Image (cartoon, rainbow, N blue to C red; front, side, top):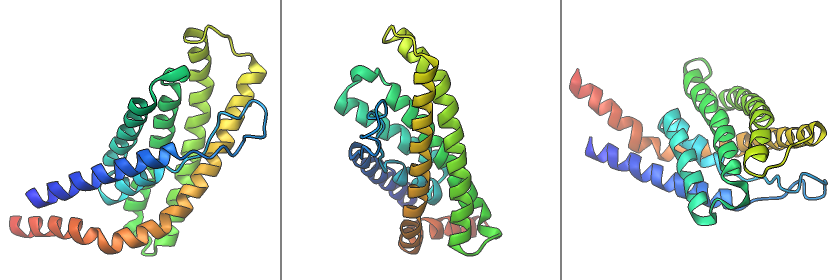
Length: 206
């Protein structure tokens, strides 16, 4: 039991640290589009999704939370007043939870990783896009009104929501693609230290 807990803590710490580093490595894919220069792509959700599959969806959420707290500590609240971190956490969890739940839950129906990953990736991306669009549409005006004392006009808001939606769609697809080789490798080596321990525990109980 102690060995299992230690391994889980090490994995959570390692994946949270990697998620934080990947979050800091941002790619401004919309740099040439006026009004969308602030939108940047990062792969910080990959370790969280991996944690969700290997350990549990709840652990994936914990990795997302730790990642954003670390980013806040390093960069500070800044001009965004935590808005970027709030949306990153919301959108990240919107991908990680359904992805992990579906990938793990479909193991009895689809033996192949490709089919499970495809279903889980498509569903998680759609959820992330929907939650991101609704979240930005509802939260962004409140943030600008109460923290920046600025009212967002409808065209500006719709442009921001559209840009964020496009970013989340691209991100969801790329994260799903990157997850395949990571799952192949991790399930080959890491589950040797996780699932067998659960099996030994249940064997002793029986």
